[in-house]
Image (cartoon, rainbow, N blue to C red):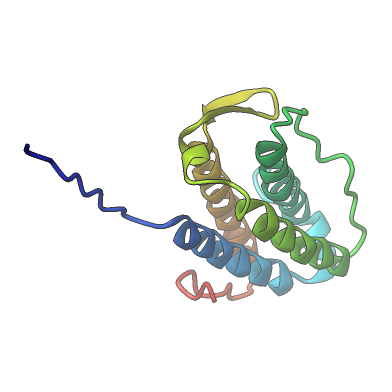
Length: 163
């Protein structure tokens, strides 16, 4: 009798994916901190949204999306529930959502990462693709924040210093 052993090498573990994402979140938090209060809510270039609005978008995606994935809830995306008035409001909610992400990410089994899920009832992709989108979207918006900070004469944090 002949048996064949199949060994699968994994590029990254789910824990490493979360660590990578949280590194980006840490850097984005530092970008938020770098903004003067007024400019965080008012400054924009070329018709783009102020960075506070971009931060609210990011806050409204990560934790709620993972909760939706875990609970198999396809409730529509909504960023109307959080209307910060200060930088401190944003940072506090950012930190709360970081914990929400940690909690719900840990509840997604390896098998579920491959499962197709209709996120927010409109993005039907495998779970891992949705999670990678969260990171990509954050990097994109953080880049806008870097442009804003430089236009304001403020040196942004080094992009490679994520922790």
